[in-house]
Image (cartoon, rainbow, N blue to C red; front, side, top):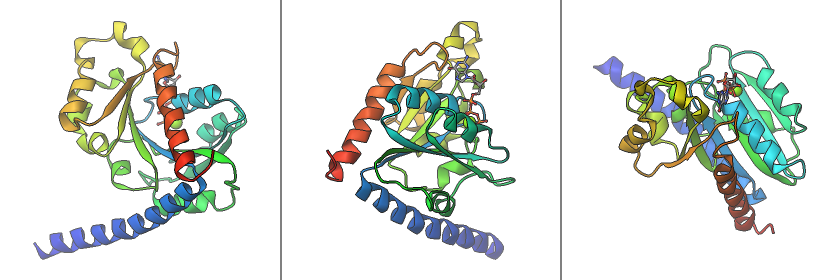
Length: 228
Ligand SMILES: Nc1nc2c(ncn2[C@@H]2O[C@H](COP(=O)(O)OP(=O)(O)OP(=O)(O)O)[C@@H](O)[C@H]2O)c(=O)[nH]1
Ligand SMILES: [Mg+2]
């Protein structure tokens, strides 16, 4: 019992110091009028694909910085820099999530002047990333029907702590068994406030509505900082 209580105390004190770091980051981003989104999902749901499509639609005149979290490789950051945006890779090795100190260090040498958007692609899993505040404005969870419609019920934290759910890979729906259905219904069962977009990064379906939301949030961030 005592040992269990000590474990809980240590965990709480670690996330508390992360929360303080994240709050400082959030304040700094807000002062600059930068909209920051933390993207979480299981591996392969389409996080980097959605970032690519978003950057393509925003165009090169919108300055975007993307922080990529993966255990190994710089493959995702390479995909971002290939588009002309700033891609910064963090390799967590055995670590299963990003934390606020990693974000502060990753951005330390980046000139954020004129930056409109920071996208943080968290390490692919639906457990740990949910608990770690990174100073983001919004958290977006991605899920694809190929993972099964029951995931919000089995991994509720990621859905509870997110503002938005993007159901990606909708182009595959006609080829999937009935067990793939129910993502939206189950996600709303754990978080009734979730805003839901349904997208396909292959056909482009649903991306216009997603982009309307992204542009509106970027405009909100600029306006709140007194940037036109
Ligand atoms: N059919 C289909 N495939 C998709 C879609 N979006 C992404 N993919 C494919 O899914 C695979 C994984 O996509 P990524 O964008 O790398 O996924 P990710 O979530 O960034 O993956 P990790 O960073 O490894 O967690 C790739 O082969 C993509 O081409 C989609 O809307 N439909
Ligand atoms: Mg990725």
